[in-house]
Image (cartoon, rainbow, N blue to C red; front, top):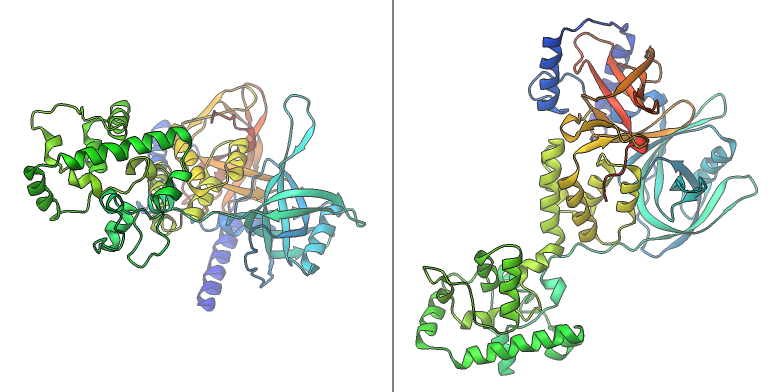
Length: 534
C-alpha cells in the first residue's frame, strides 16, 4: 500500500516538474471561445469527467511550492476531552483551522521558529501546536484573539538555509484557550483544554430516553411489553428488549418544565379518554394496523398540513382535542385510537426530534453540499456526522468570521443545522470593504481535491485562505503573471484588486500550458469577503 502511495506521489511530482518547465504562453481568446470555456467551467466545476477539465486537482493539495518536506512519521492518538496541556501557539490572521483540514506554514519569524522547534521536542504532545485566529476589532482597531482554536499536528517539515522552516500540519481537535504567555525563548505558548465533543444523536431514542408506550405504562405492567424488532424500537425510541434502564413516568416528567409537564399530562388524560371510548370498529382497524406497524400516527398526521397548520395539529393532539381537519376521504378515521397508545410518551412528535437527529441532518447537509460543489459521493461522511460537520465548515466559501462562528459551535446537530442554513442562503460573494458584488455561488470552481476553499502560504509567511472562482466581476489585474511560488502547478499568478476600492482581493491564475484547462481562474481571499451570514 505504501509503495503505491509513494509511486503516485512520484508521478504527481513529475507532472509538476513538466508543468513548471513550460514557458508562459499568452493567447488571444475571442468572445465565442471565452463563452464556451465559461460553460465548461460551470458544468464541470473541477471534475474531469467531461474531458474538458484537464487540470489534476490533486496537485494543489501537495503544496509543492514548499519544496521537498520530510515526513515526521508521527501520528498522534486523540486526547481525551477535558484534557489540559501546554502547547506552542500560532496566531494567524484570516485563517480558521478545523479538525481534519490541512494547514501549510512558512515560518520566518524567530519566535515562531522557536515555537516549531519546541513542538518537535516536547514530551506531552509531540509535534503539536495550537492554532488561534487573530483579527482586528472593526470598532477600535485593537488586536483580538479567539478563545476557541484547533490543535495541529506537524506532519511534514523542512529546515531551509536561511533559518526558516516550511511546515505542513493537519487539524486535530478543538480546544479552549485558558491562558497564554511568552517563554524564555520568546515563543508564544498557551494552556489549552481539549473540548469534549458530543456523540452523534440518533433520535428520538437519545432525545427522549427509552420510554414504553402509553398502553403499557398506563396498565402498570412493564414486563408484558410485546417483542418488537430493532427498527421499530429505534423509530419509537423504545430501545431493545434487553435495555434495563427504561425511563419511568416520574423520571421523564421530572425533566420537563412546569408548562411542559401540564401539557404532557393533558395528553395522557386525553389518551385515557380515548381508550374508554374505543369501539369495535377501532379494534378491527387495530388488527389491520399490525400488518404494517412501521409508521407512527405522528408521522401520518404530518400529511394534514405543513408549517403552522402542522404545528396546530400537533398542539391539538397534545391538548387532547379531537377537532381535526375535515377531508373528503375522512382520512383521520382510518387510524385506530389504539395506535396512539403505541406512540412513545415523548413530549413532541417524532418529526420535531428529527430536527436534532445528527444522521438525518448529515444527509441533508451532504445533499446541499453536493448541489453547490458537485462533489463525489459523500456516503462515508454521512455515516460520520461529526467529521462531515467539520469538513463542510472548513471548505465552505464564506467569510472568516462565519467560519469562526462554526468552529465555536458545541454540538454536532447545532453545527450541521447552521451549515444547512448557510448553504441554503449562500449566493453572493462581495468585497468586505465596499460591498461590491464579485461573484455568485454558481461561479465557484474546484481547483483542489480538498475543496473550493483552501489554505496556502506565500514566501513571506502569510497564510491565505482562498476560494476559487471561474468568473469574477469588478476586479482589476495588476502586473505581469509570475510563475515562481505558484500554489497551483502549471499556473502563473497576478495580483487582483477591487476596481471600486482598490483593496487586494486575491489573484488571477493563468495557465502556462496550451492544453491546460481551465485557461484561467480567480483566487479570492476569504478574509476580504463580506459577512452575509446574519
